Amino acid sequence: MFAKFKKYLFETDYVLLATILVLACIGIFSIYSAGYNPYTNETDNFYKRQLIWLFLGLVSFFVMSYVNYRKLIRFVPIIYGIGVFILLIVLILGHIKMGAQRWIGIGPFRLQPSEIFKIVWILTLAWLFMDFDGKRLDLLKIIKKSWMLLPPFILVYEQPDLGTSLTYVAVWAMVLFILGVKRHVFVIALLAVIIIIPVGWQHLHDYQQTRVLVFLGLVQDKKGDGYHAEQSKVAVGSGGINGKGFLGGTQAHLSFLPESHTDFIYSVINEEQGLIGGTIVILLFLFLIFKILNIAIKSKEASGKLIAIGVACYVFFQFIVNAGMTVGILPIVGIPMPFVSYGGTSLLSFFTMMGIVNSVQLRRYSITE
Image (cartoon, rainbow, N blue to C red; front, side, top):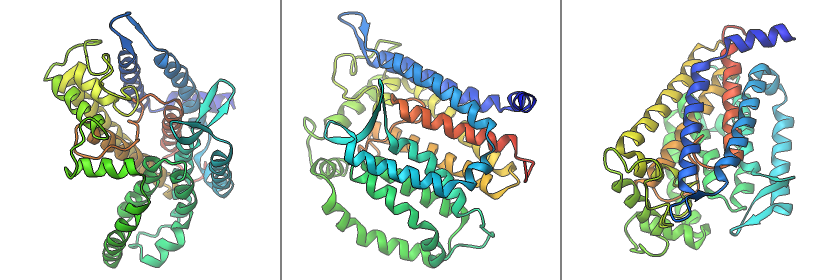
């Protein structure tokens, strides 16, 4: 066992690991800065908590690298069932914060099961489509293989957490698009969206509707529900090319920018490190997605390919949405930037995903071991 672990340790994709570590470190420095008080020269403890979760994430990365991902695929029905059950428990016994019931307390830590379920959903998609034969999917096959999307979507939406629930849908849709669907599916999907939008609009909370209206320019509310978006754009624009320097930002330090250490961490990066710093983060994410897709291409087994594709879709979607909302090209939703935003469960989940991707990489030339 030790010899096997040593072999995998030596063959680990350390470029992949280094990339996510750089992103995580950028996040920790930015979280430190977001919580800095220029009047007292002190900062809050968010960065310390993030460091603890980073350590746990590294442990999870190597543990999941050692575990054969094919064994995980075999137990997907059980893993999925446990995951859905925990999401249900959250709605009954979960900790309530800011009107949302999303967390479960475990000792001094609070876990957000909806973030952990992202791992479950990646494995579930790989399990559902691992018999893919290369032919374009028709509507009946998609329906048969996609019913498992509904329970987690509904349970997380009811927390309420529209942002996370939409990530499940978005990754599912992107995986289907990559696999290929028949033309009539696009037509039906378009008609479904046209029907769902007005129905879904009625079920959105008032603040969610206002955010969309502000984004579309139909409502001017710079001091109310549009405040977050406005202050974020001010922070990004004020950074210029070179930025104001580490701890030199004002939007977060003077409390103009809400949730600066979580949803708007990219605004902090752009204000302090400027266009150059923001561009470096973009390039790091593009490189990371390229690395993951390259592993998918080299894998000789279908479920391994699907796992890597699913993780790449998750990283891409969450990065694009988070960065887009900070610069005003997308409406405000509560989706963190992978590896960078404050959030222990999110950081742990993405490091775990990368560990599973590394497991695929380590076994990419084998279809049995």
